[in-house]
Length: 228
Image (cartoon, rainbow, N blue to C red; front, top):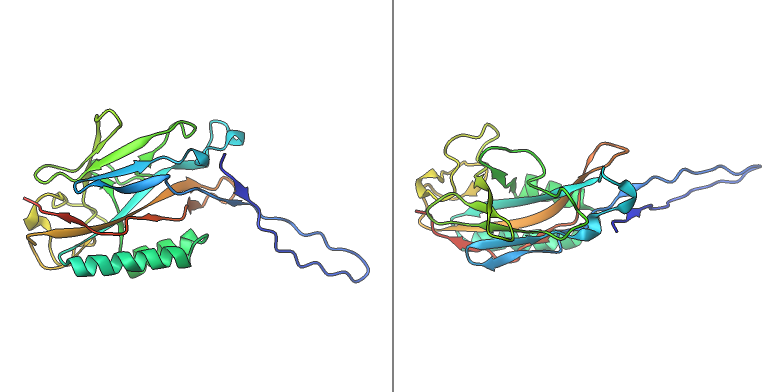
């Protein structure tokens, strides 16, 4: 069962009477049970059923998972950035908003998205009480795909190059990678690319209507990729 943490910081002063203090409720989400590179060309994400809250019924605050990435033409740069992610994930443990700000603003990580949609969450979980696995195939000569446990293709991925997504968004074409793309750091048309990834749970606080993230799961080494 997902927990609602209620941090209690109470400063009560007694002069001639006691002052009652309200206790805010904070939505807590668990990170994916697993997020890793199951092979050089595939990522696996395992749903964490602890994100299911039986008290919320059919209107769950937890919605699914987001995956963030960045591409580089240098393996050394990619690993340095990953090391920074890992360090800051530890530094900001329990404060996912601070981590997300660092990752997306300082390191310029962007959301993984589908060709047909850039909506959140990337991986929706319709029944969070059940286990679920997702597989992201980093194909070399066709669009990357999202597959289920039975290897059925659920969707196709595109690069998140700009806020006004263009047709240059395929991962597998070397000439599509250009200096200045939002999701890439390096020279134009690289022969090899090095990817960094992390994943977070995604939800919406029913009281504040704010987006809520879990702590991240960072893949601690880069994935080498050779586009066509």
